[in-house]
Image (cartoon, rainbow, N blue to C red; front, side, top):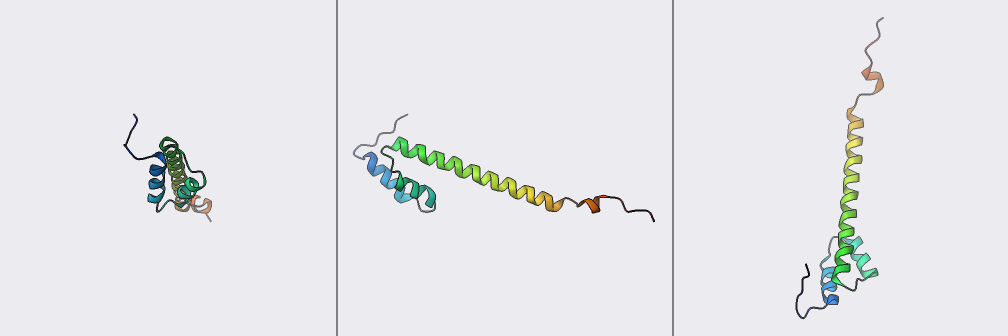
Length: 85
């Protein structure tokens, strides 16, 4: 599916997209450094960034869950029955 908007060049579209990035400094700087020449290239870079960002969030969540589980699990000494005297 190709989207065509008359009288708007790829360069104008890329510029508008980059100007609209307010909270994603990493993507913003990457696009300024390696400015894509077409909208297809722009969307590929943005999609790759989104996939990477989602993966990082999942990793952080899993690490946080593991650390919470470690804190909630009993230590070895607590899991043993008390000694008979």
